[in-house]
Length: 507
Image (tube, rainbow, N blue to C red; front, side, top):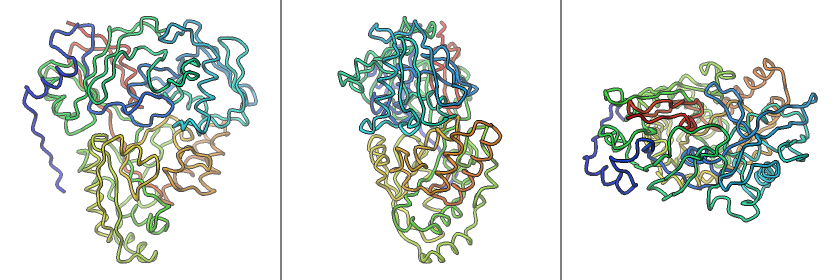
């Protein structure tokens, strides 16, 4: 496929109707942020959600014990302070005594205990369960003290607790069975209204212990066509927008009235293979696919070069030079030989799934990969799915291949243990594990020396790229666009929108 793309902006009347349906008006209060994004949440349970669109909404409503700042440093959230014991087998927290849930109840140690017991329970199906399996028991000596007793030292545990998948929810709501049916958190905003695939209405939580929220609320419109979002920004019908499509985002700097935040993120674009399905069960076939994919060409074609080729580890503290990894320089002849040696000289047919809308480049990525793999005899059929259908299919591991955008983390263990350890709760998605991967992950989990951890995870990354269960492609950027009178947003390498807590809307 070609490398030039054009998109026609929809007429003003079309997005005006859409914004009106979402509850927007040009006379909205200056203290209410009028916002738009293209993908809506797929659910409200912070422990179960994996879609970025869900996490971006829920992180405004719920809170974890700790969070990451823009420099990926761990800072307080619901916890004022924390401390590991000398042997690394106890992690203690002191909660902020002013923290309250949005039902008026104080956040207590019992809520923390109930939340972690829920997300560690296998029947919950929590997205990040594998990160917390070192927790043996949880003590609550008083209302503001929580003590996690661990089966072994677990260095990345604290980083894992920064995720909204580890949010603290009210114990009373767990008992009532209402988690996921309504959103009662302790975060900076209350979710007053949610009309799926249409709008969200959030109001500032005046009792948020984290400080003063600078806006009265956020009215979010869901506009699946990002060209419509750009048009609405141009006509000042919205103040702030999250953009996923680089083909749209790169047009923003042309608008004198708008500003664009462009931030490198840890999330990674990847072609996931299913090594439990023939012929991907064969190492040579998986390696052939890795050698046949031109990562830079996919990046240049689908994302206009808006990113960089990356190995599995995307966090700056651990990332290595991807050119040192297996077959990161395209080698079609090597790929053909690997296919022949594996018994597939004539190729095979397979299906790749991709989600519509997130990432918006998924279809283009799939098409470029389809073309590249055809050169080694692989006939790839592309199956596009609505996001919620894609997520369900992906979680079941029900695919030959999948074009995916997966979340990055500040620590390699909390990023990948759910896929590449024998106890990983998303092992069904990865469908591959070996003793080397599992052993290196466990070593990295308990090692406290930073330099030794880097060596361990460098070996993990090298081995993972060589056995090629997935084909890592690249990292990209998060984009937010806003009117000139919107100031104070702090972007994050995690792609978080928590920086909306410091936004102000001027006249």
